[in-house]
Image (cartoon, rainbow, N blue to C red):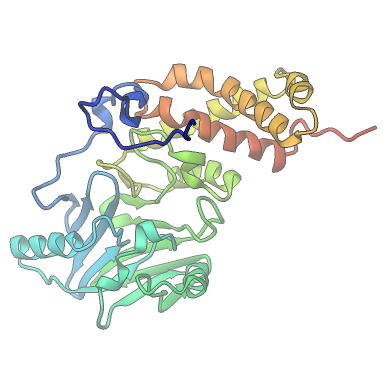
Length: 333
């Protein structure tokens, strides 16, 4: 009598392949994409300009400004967590300034950039877009207290004599994602749009409004700045990084427009018959792969992980071109 086969865990010496044995290989990461090494506690603290500093764990970024009225913190990623206060303390010791975080500015409501906000208690003034407050009240996450002060389109803060310009130019990565400009420090912070040196992750950095996402780099470049804080990965950005991202996204959009009229859906619908969703998946995947291929070839070795995530971003650009712009839409006769 036969018995059902079972799957059991195996040791590395068992001779049975594990999942790790079939993991794909990817192109090497260009050295230009990498930032400084983190310290033993898992963070790097750098000076952007004068009394503006940035902190990274190699994947996420935050920033803070020291002023006579206290420390202004920009975002609080949970992966950096308590290292944010350690970085502030390190600066306070070295520079002889206050280590008290008195203001916390939210770039947007997402937990991966604000999930350590509750670490900063007391009389902290929390500032964000009005939509950030609405979304955080909706989400009711105790790790992300909602902003106590909000704005609609623009607001200029003056904290300790330091001007900080906040602006909402419409939905992009999220409905509430804002631009933070520090004119006296030649710095712009715009999170989850451009990852300096790297391709966007899944679906254009998990963007909710693709037309707004595509417009955001041009908006950023309309401001005067030298240093760019993008919220992700291990180094600061430059204006050239933003322009490179623009060109990458433009090349994806152009390739999508070339592929849409040329990939024939017929074989997928013939094969899958009544399983319409299987046919749609096959067709859309083929479209995205066709459009992504020349972009991957062009940017591999230029943008890190171009070979990893370009197909996903291409799919999202393709869907926006189809659904937001109506390209290729046909009315049944």
